[in-house]
Length: 153
Ligand code: FES
Ligand code: FES
Image 1 (cartoon, protein in one colour):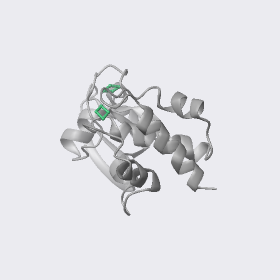
Image 2: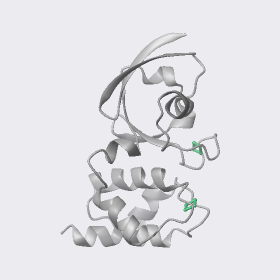
Image 3: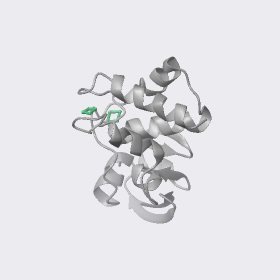
Image 4: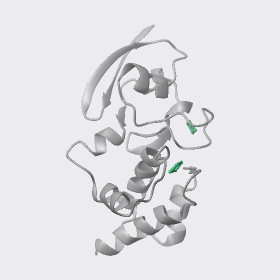
């Protein structure tokens, strides 16, 4: 076991981890942070997406020990003071069905809009390509992101 610390959703957290403990498991099972989900456990689906040092990362592919001294933000973190405009439009337009992909989709779209507030449809598709959704066919999600960009002139 090694003691590590990281900033999780704005708070410094300390935890003892085994060298082979996966970040996704630590977040969900030991830190009470349930928004990252286990979909494939092999880096393919994006359900486990978190922000690691301001960039999206797949928490199923990262050893927790690697995050010592780093900053992690999950969906809980971006919604601390209420739903973001992106979350609101997703909700208003009822874009998700089961919602399993939603945390990862929201973080990936948030990252995109942070870098590029007026992306093209292709750029949205490209940014969300690593987040698989088995329910929606993607169109409502992409349409809602583009709709939001029109409101943010
Ligand atoms: S659970 Fe991590 S990418 Fe699928
Ligand atoms: S809404 Fe079910 S996986 Fe996306």
